[in-house]
Image (cartoon, rainbow, N blue to C red):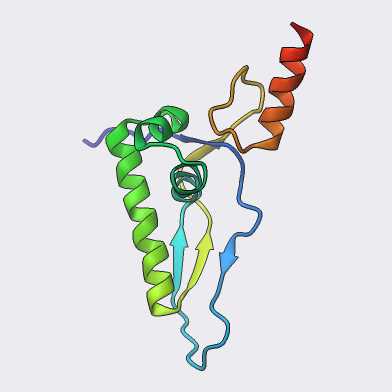
Length: 123
């Protein structure tokens, strides 16, 4: 029997959840689905500059799991770009961050920065 999957911690949902090619004559019905946790791994590692280890700590999963999530996400992005397919971000097993932590590792989340600044100012 396989182990139950842990919910992966995600800071916030993406502002835009679908990307599609323009300037193309070919229209494909195929859509690549990227899960929210895969999006979060791309955001943390490629956009925020986290290492895979830092990403795994933030998402509350094992480093090997974070690496697998990240590799799947990059494969999907590459396929959408190369094949000119629509990429949609939805679903997955994740839990949105509450914003009530004393420290947020993402560094890019305005909600957390504001919360941390307020808590630091109170001390």
